[in-house]
Length: 216
Image (cartoon, rainbow, N blue to C red; front, side, top):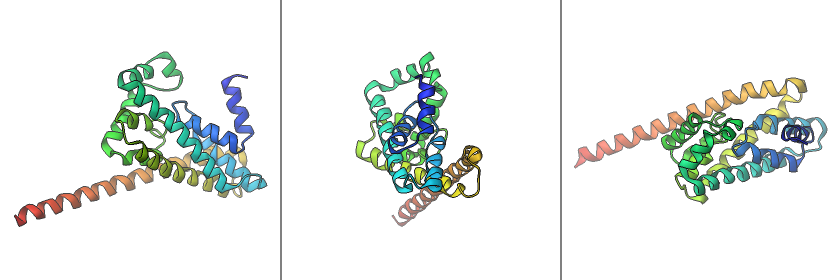
């Protein structure tokens, strides 16, 4: 069985084991969108009751943590030169990697600090790569796991809610396109809120510092 056929088989036979495995793959450098895993599982849960939505979130998040740890450890062990060399190689291109995508993920991490691991789980273009700059920067493992768990848990909860709710109003063959549309909007909404929050705290910090300097 080829890799594509294997993935298709897993998607057609979603259970807690295949959900965990597919989400681990999704969170590594192999591009498997979470939208084709979690929402269909939740859709099935609403339609048949064979799966539990809470367990879908749990095992989906567990898979996300496993895949993210793979990226984190590889980046930690291999270092920036080898990671970028792999991204620019033919094999890297097969996995849809490139120097531009790596630079984008690393820039996102540098701009948002440790919080980027949490925010990155909510951004489609960054989600599966944000663990790499975290490893390259030697981010503390406990902080990395905390932010990854919170971000992945929130994202998987959103996707589960979408799939479960849409079961009653959207035909199954329209589920993926509907979820993809709304998931991108949700991701952009979270990024906007995060940027506004960061700007607010920067403003408050600058104002407080100015007040302290004036008082001296």
